[in-house]
Length: 328
Ligand code: NDP
Image (cartoon, rainbow, N blue to C red; front, side):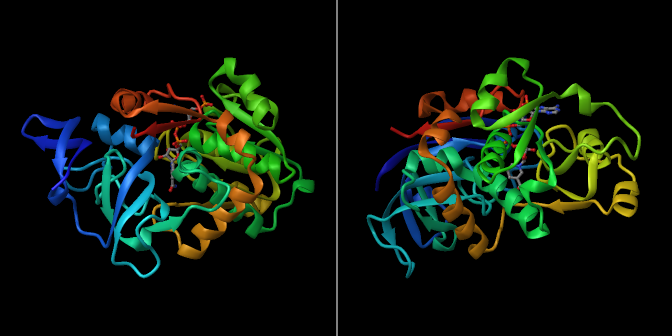
């Protein structure tokens, strides 16, 4: 029986606590594939989970980490064999099933994908749920029929994980991209990703009129709240906003005016249980479109020892792009 290191969230009468622990393989949950985790990554949801904020964890104890990549060591699943390099994102990892902040994982092969070349496990984790979600947003806008000739695209929470990928993917698809950020010092970073215009977060965070000057053809919103209401109010006729996040709040103080007077569409995007075909299409498109160097610009690699502190800091908006955890 092999021991392994993990970050575990326990709950007792004093509340939730996250800490490093040693676990045994027999402590793992059910699954038909075992993986030696090589890399994981920190998502906003992981930050909420370790900080005990928001109802992320649905059973205790829990190993957080909605993303993981590594090598298969045992498989009873027809699509995977020992030695395969695989990636798993979302699917309840770190919420209802033990996730990626551990040296070992046991999970359902249905949640896994083989790594699409030229992605390495580290770069796949730099992409992770955040990059996939950004890709789902772009695919949703394309299914809506939006094209770069339509005008300006806007991305909120632009220096965050989802936002950074959304800026890069939209720019790669030919859009002119306006990046909305609260970090005035990150203009150069955003321009390097492909942003052609930077908008201060405050410009969109105060309550505004139901219909405002038409500025954007499409949007990717990671923020929610008043910002999303303003984005819709500033979207042009027949435009669309793909909404995937809520860092500024769950509430959505909008009116129906943009929908019924400008034909604007609000496209919901979720990455927790996307259809397998959509997931494969998204990975293939990311592997095809994103230059590995662009992925490196958006990511930083840290050791597992530093993962808990860094996960706690994401909720305070203290992380730029993607933080990848090297399990060592
Ligand atoms: P990050 O923390 O990496 O990015 C969030 C960014 O939002 C920050 O970097 C900051 O960017 C901006 N921000 C932070 N606080 C505020 C605020 N109060 N008001 C406005 N902007 C703010 O998180 P992720 O990119 O990982 O996730 C973003 C959102 O997307 C989260 O709500 C997350 O839960 C959600 N999400 C949803 C998924 C789905 O399936 N629908 C999947 C993955 C993520 P800046 O300083 O540039 O403004």
